[in-house]
Length: 73
Image (cartoon, rainbow, N blue to C red; front, side):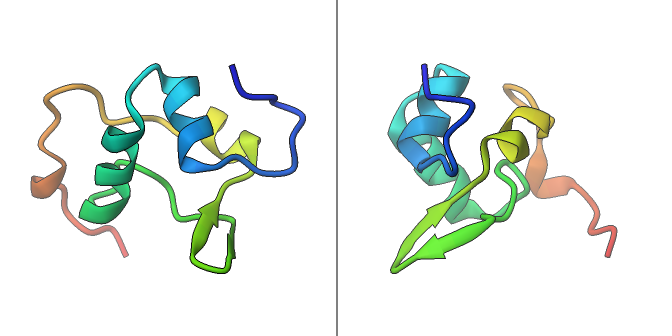
């Protein structure tokens, strides 16, 4: 389990926290459908999130059609 008091979490930390594979989280990021919040920081080419961002984030859920969600911006 990743440290909730860490400054930032990586994709691997998020995968551990959610109980999914690293590849799944990487796919969430690549698709850009709101399955993963925007990173709080980027170090080089590596995105990073504050633990609170991920803990508060409401995941769409298995089987959710995130490709059909309307853009609210």
